[in-house]
Image (cartoon, rainbow, N blue to C red; front, side, top):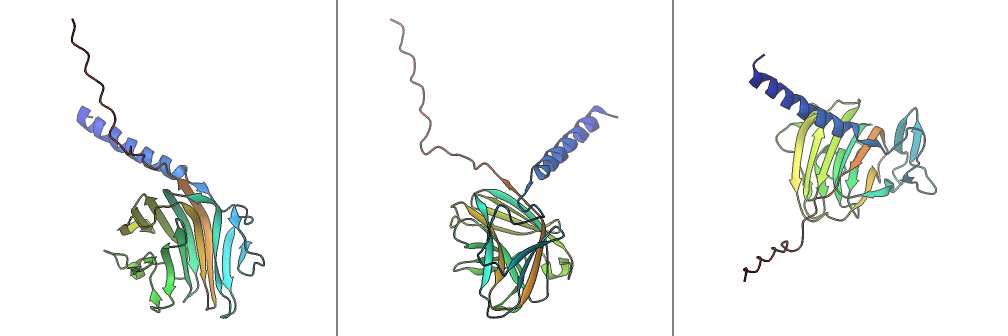
Length: 220
């Protein structure tokens, strides 16, 4: 094999290995057994664990809904999970402080249509996932994998392995818990499994330019 091809192959394998390593570094934030590591409401009519699946359910339209949050807070983070929901369910994944940044899962109660992988943000409302017909990518009544990459003001969302949304905003900078939503006012069921996350180190930029060393004094 020519030396050039060998180098190219090695380079590609290195990239693949680095990518795989990043995925392998994702850690479970749901243990598949109980709600350890999550802020559980008391009383808790919403969340149960069955056969390794986190089940969120609302059985009465009078219920107010709930967002199940991690005890740990995250700034820059990768979140990956598999999710399945009943028709008409309204759920989502929250990041950062104050439950203001949300990746939608399922139907919008207000719009009455599926908005999965769109962003629901204050003032902006829905920012639809661009470039792809997400409804055609969804596995109806089956498990769908969502991956979210939040680094500083930049956010990327993948659905079943395809990048479907990119957004940039400086409004959601403060770290906060990861949240999983049950929307109030409707009967619904949503299930999560293989819920993983990886906290990323934010890039630290100095507030001032580094000092320039003084020039040596001329010899006398």
